[in-house]
Image (cartoon, rainbow, N blue to C red; front, side, top):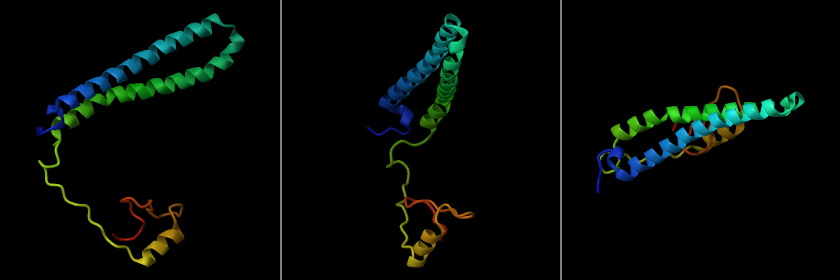
Length: 132
């Protein structure tokens, strides 16, 4: 069956709900992890705080990552509702393949991606400083 948008597909909606549940559970688990960390800090001697601080920093980092992932759910849902789902519905143009000259390859090897002022990227669809 052909669906106009991805959101109309029941499997997509189910996968989005599962992702939303997992991301929200991750935020809640990191918040509960902070409470557990706080309890561990209070119940251990003060000199062990040096060992607990790296755990705090890692926990804060992962809590922020989980919060950002949960915040991006609305944007993902909007994209799934708007953009076409099947390739047959919209016109898909084939990728244009161009043959590069050997001088272009030599120049990109000599300059390399580390050279300042070049927009060199490796092979798959990127630019190497030469016109395509």
